[in-house]
Amino acid sequence: MGAWATGIFDTDSALDWVMELAQVGVMAIAAVLLDTQAAAADGFIDVDPGSGVLATCDITAAGLGHPMVPRPNFDGMLDDARFWAWVDGRPEVTPTVALICLDTIELVVADPETTELYGLWRDGEALFSAMLLASAHDLRGRLEAVTE
Image (tube, rainbow, N blue to C red; front, top):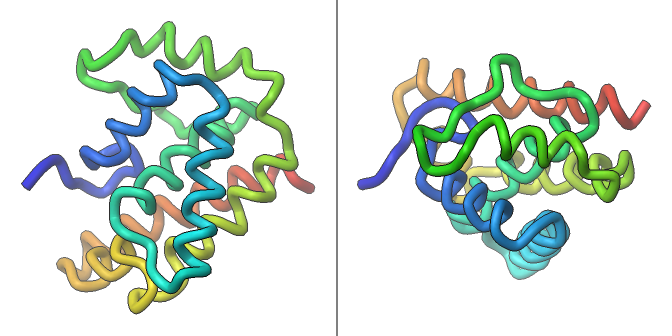
């Protein structure tokens, strides 16, 4: 079993996605959102894309001036300061992307029968599940702040 804790960036899947974003660039944001929406249309979202969506959307919120506080660090996987400076300088990350994130987050956390990540959260210890859902709720609030 890999990394698993209560924060959006506290899973191996999310950290893998951050590494991909650092290498591929902002186009990875659109790809993960569209891929997850397609998976939802097919009936089920696996844990890795679900974790990637939450990381994607958190990075989108940060790029629009509403980062998680404190910003997560990536334990030496990449240069944190350089990565967050790169995120902050992304003009391609727009409020429209934030709206797409809000729709996609709902797909990831709406129903434990159609999303593996939410099912794992629900099946875990009650406090752990509550903390994970609180992270998703906080993220939605930060994204809503840039779309109003």
